[in-house]
Length: 413
Image 1 (tube, rainbow, N blue to C red):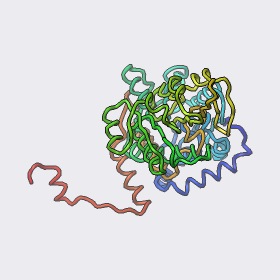
Image 2 (cartoon, rainbow, N blue to C red):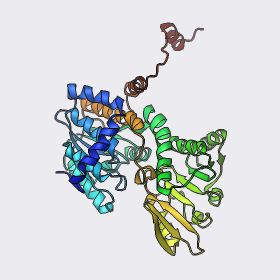
Image 3 (cartoon, one colour):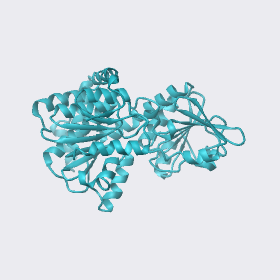
């Protein structure tokens, strides 16, 4: 039975779900085929992704394909209580309550896994961690799963190296339609949506420090520049640092950037990116935001320890007052700012990402039990989604002639 905050919120949640469905045509086309073919008949699918309207739509599509779907969140601050209730009212077993503590969050994940899933769709590796450990008894029916995020893929690679995977997993985050489109353009827009909505401040004229210049960091920096910010990038990868430089951004260390920034956004997937030595030299009223998966990039515990007091300045903003009187503002508790302080990626973006998830889950269902290793998304799935998305947008592209194919496949001019 579903565990949500209040089923009276279901109507509001269904409205949100209905709205995003209107802007997710690729997933809509998959839904129509799934409903006719029932590829998941007799299968149980556990989904742990940020529990908001686009995720609920993915769960609904899987359900229409014959699956019993068990839905939970991947971050307690990104769970929307009305969407959780709305999903539950659509017959999806839903386990999600906004703002629960760590123990409450873990309990909801464990409840979700009691279904003994055949397929998992994970975001950050939390389901995998449980199935490889405390909930190993729930893994007996596992065929395989999909991972949504960069951070989750890093954890899976470490598990694969240590022979510690509970099942075969597909690296959905590495699909072209995910990192080219979702990570760059989705993160680029949704991070600034969350920051601007929460702070009610202007971006133009500010110095923005973006930590990390992967696909997500590229998007965050690009959008900040487009809105008139002076953008500094920090990196540990020399080639990404060169790329940022060639794209017109100043590149320096975080130690150098800390006294200069008005807004800091971490997008690295690593821990301890901004630490007390950086807090010590930051401007008064600097804004601290994280867009990496876990709340370890900005050292919130270190900031709390330095502060003489904390003040809730606005919803989702806590100001930490330092001994010299400066205040540093932490957004969304250092969790994903685009979800803790906003609605996540736009529907049109998640249309592609969740289309990859749906078709990859179908691939697993057809293939059967995967070897306990990390798989790439089959290229035919990736390419098919891009074609469908272009068609939905009314965009046509050229196709190679047979002569061109022969030319590209040979060595003779």
